[in-house]
Image (cartoon, rainbow, N blue to C red; front, side, top):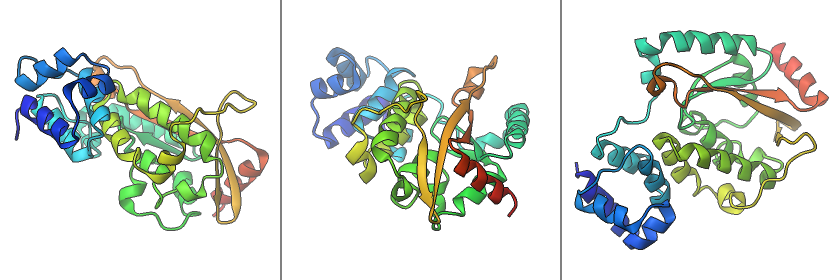
Length: 258
C-alpha cells in the first residue's frame, strides 16, 4: 500500500488536477497539499474528509487513503456488533421499538443501515425489488436509480437538502465523505444536487414518494448520541420517518395490519 504522500499525489494526478486546483477544491492551502505529497505532513482527521470529497474518491480509494494516513477506517456494519457497542445497540433497539408505528432505522456516519424496524421493511416492500447493495445505505437507497430515486415526487426540493446534509457530515466524517463522492455521480444528484432547497410551510422539507400507486409524505427526525468515547458514538444516528399528512398516516396503519 502506498504511503499517504504517494497515494495523494497519485490520486491527484489520475484526476489531472494541479496542487493549486486541489487546494482550492478542498479548502486547504497549496503549501499544505505540497507538504502532504512530499511526506512533510500527514493528513489529519479534519483534512482527510475534505480531500476525499474534493477528489471524488470511490469507497475503496477513500479507504486506501484513510489507511495510508494511519487513521482508523470508517465503522462498518460488522463493527456494529462489537461488544463495546452493546449498550448503544440496546438503546437503539428501544428507540426502534418505541417508533414501531413509523419507519425507523439506525445509521452509521456513512449512511449504512445498521438496523431497521418492521415498518421500514414493509414500506420498502411497496417499491420494486431493490438490490441489497443499494438498500444497505440510506443515501444509496434514496438517490440511486435502482432505489427510490424514480419514486421521488419532488427531487428539486429533497435532493439539494439531502446533499447539503451529507456535505456537512463529510466535513468531519471520512465515511460520509466517501459516500458523498459516490452518490454525487447519480443522475438525480447531477440534475438537482446543486440547486437551493426550498423550505415547506412548516420550515422543514418533506420526503414524498409514489410507491405502489400511493403517495407517501414523511418528515424525517434524527437522533444522535453523546458519549465519553466519541470514536464509538460519532455518526451513529437513529432516524424516523413521521407521516407528513393524514393520508400517509392511514397508509402506515394499513401497513401495520399486514
